[in-house]
Image (cartoon, rainbow, N blue to C red; front, side):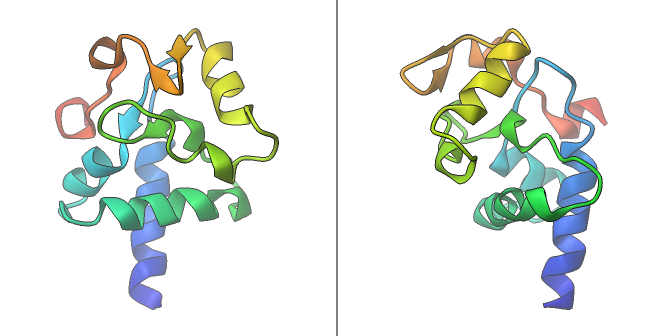
Length: 110
């Protein structure tokens, strides 16, 4: 478990760097951390992020197609969508419009 805790902490460091109004994917974070096949583990970290002392903007992490796959892990039915919309992100049918323009790739940005 020590390994996954360390990995989760590294995921949170990257997630906290996602700019306001931008989004990234589980896979992009995993790839940046040198664990390209660990997108699911990044998802687990996001599911656990509410337990962190310092806030993690988990709402800014979506699947590779810009779909809000993690929304059922947020309190309230539409909290993930509401948080994104409050940052100016447009969502249609659980998918981010203009995903390519809003996509933040840690491998390129950091």
